[in-house]
Image (cartoon, rainbow, N blue to C red; front, side):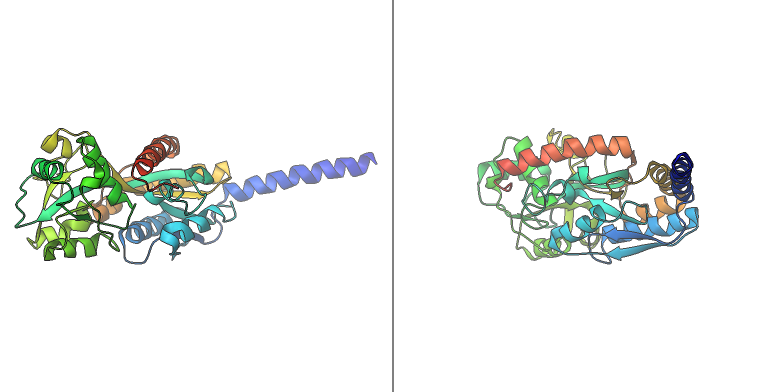
Length: 322
């Protein structure tokens, strides 16, 4: 009996050591990186440059897989429900703090092992080149004086750029309902609608508006951030333009399923920081006008907690929360 007990203890200890060794050796095989959005978009591009640089850093393939559908629910669910062994990771996006408020999924940021935030693209206010409004202050004045006159677009109903508009108006003491929202399939078609005169303003990121701005079909009036975008340094911040402190951004970060082993978290976090600091990553993002922001797991968690609460309050006020 005693011998069997000792053998059992030895087996258990060996199992723990083997598990620890396996985790310490991670990755020993290819890693899947799930992207909840389609190929060719900003999230996909960011994930692919990170995956290629992690592959160089860690010596194993990091394969990007697009899992689209359900306004981001399908891909985010696939990341959260994967085995927590370090071989399925993903790029989570700002929508994880919005989808559950809309009743699309019970998932929240708490259902993941957070690694780091690697990007943020602040919202910006755009108008047509021939618009009668030459500043963000003029846009807000018109929205206040003429409820329903201005129409805005940038994404679907209740999407990040819709909330950017609502928050901007609210910060200026203007009811968000004063500017009707025209849902679109994204920023690109919204900018085309702006150029064609279908809407008066678009709230989306500078990178998404860049093509139309450079084609002289649109003008940026303000960036909803604390600093100006280096690609368009002449576009003021919203605070500079109107005095409003409102800021918001679409962001991207790397995460895994809840319960990722600590050893994997540490090794992945360290490798990801090297990737983030690399000249290749910085150049790739700068060339596309994408913002680079680093928040480690602890700071990322604190940021998401505040963002989740802020979005929930705003969506309730807009009648978008269920």
